Amino acid sequence: MGVRGIDHVNLRAPADLVERLRRFYTDLIGLREGPRPTPRSGSRGHWLYAGERALIHLGIAADGDGQPQRTGWLSHVALACDDLEAMRARLDAAGVPYRVEIVDAPGQVQLFLSDPAGVGIELNFRTDQR
Image (tube, rainbow, N blue to C red; front, side, top):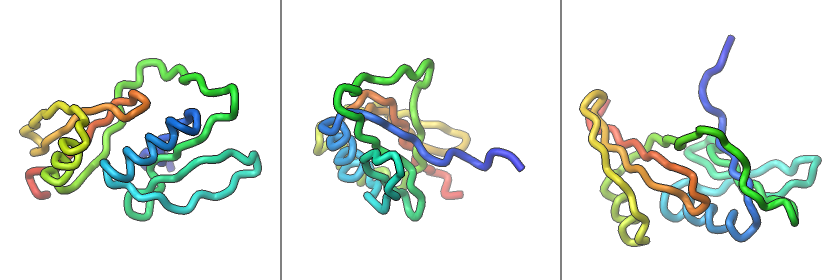
């Protein structure tokens, strides 16, 4: 028994920023919006899926509660991705700046960028075909 992995990342922001985040993660990054249970608290938002997994939860902050949260030293969220060329084409077409790193072992290309809320995102593309 123990930790098996990260379940999801939660971003909570005012409704207009959540909509920008939703479009960023679906239109550019390639996640898809999927089912979101209705919590008893009545909170609103979106769940964004990679395959069958709700990987990113977007929560809409209550009116008057739209201040950024203190996240300490969190640097970025890393996502395992496919199709490097298509991702670069989407980011380039949208004018989203990113930095490229090539890692020899394991063989991968990493793209570093920020989402509309300023959260650091690392997109990892395997090149060693394991």
